[in-house]
Each structure stands twice: as C-alpha cells, then as structure tokens.
Length: 99
Image (cartoon, rainbow, N blue to C red; front, side):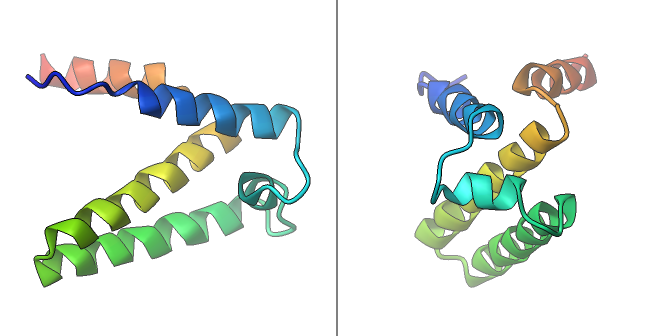
C-alpha cells in the first residue's frame, strides 16, 4: 500500500468534467470534447498515447515511462468524461476484480 496522495486524479477528472459542462475558449480539453470528429478524436489521442507509453517502456527510461503514462491516463480520463464514465465506476470494477 502507498501513502501517495492520489487526489490529483479526482481533481483532474473534475476539471475535465467542468470543461464539458462549461466550455472554456482555448481549452485543450474542450478542443477534444468538441472536436468535429467526435469521440474518434479522443480515441486517436488514447491510441497515440498508448503507443508512446509502450515505446517508452521499451526504451527503459523511467522518466519517459512516467511522462507518457501520465499523458495516457489524462486522455483516458477525457474519454471517460466524454462517455459519462466516472472514476468511481472504474474503481468499483477494479475492486470487484480483486476479489
């Protein structure tokens, strides 16, 4: 078990959700959520970041793995918000799998 404060995930999720509900001009999140490609644009970013994460792991550079994994997690959260999925639902699923 870790003592690391993971509240940043809830904070980021809340910000992403607020951008969906109350768009802000010039916001990167809004540009993804409101893109003319719809969900496909977000999925492109998730796929891109997944590939970059894999390449970072293959390079064995810890700082690159952390950086690219952070990008991947961020874009997954944008996808969750776009599809109305909460972090609580993800946590519940993970918890059920652990049983």
